[in-house]
Image (tube, rainbow, N blue to C red; front, side, top):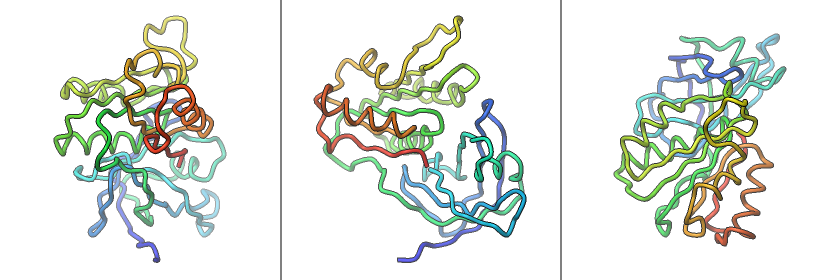
Length: 238
């Protein structure tokens, strides 16, 4: 079945960490999606606008929110990174196809949730958490969000505000390469999970981020944490 193509206006664009940008789009008429899905942007080369290729980005906003939110970690010299950091600006029209993907919350059979993210892998998890809470979901939810250093942190105040407003939600922020002055958690998400989640075998896991992290989490969940394969849901960087 052919994908539907949409055009949307960029309503916001800003750098939120030393190599991370967020941008928002007005939601096009007729576009709907499920929390956790992604779209394919038609991305031009900065130096040759006629050269266009598709790049996948997870939607960070919830379906119930009025705009579409995206976050991108910039890779030096990359097509999408240059487009976002050098070319894209407010009021620009952006073309994309979608929605795509099956990385959505299971409808039943999961009583306790654990979300694991590195850097921009937080995008679909934010969408899932916000939408679940909007729908009155009261299941225990823990989010472990890991970046390298303090300069890589973003969205922490918003995530903490969500946790403060919802007693069933707990947010754990960790740095894999903290400075000497860092007072919070340190280590990779799979290590922090062992430290802060007392009931790991009872959790269903939703994980998104660097492919090697996702692979490690899937292996540990099945081999060490006694979590059934079907209760580990993953999405690599998109």
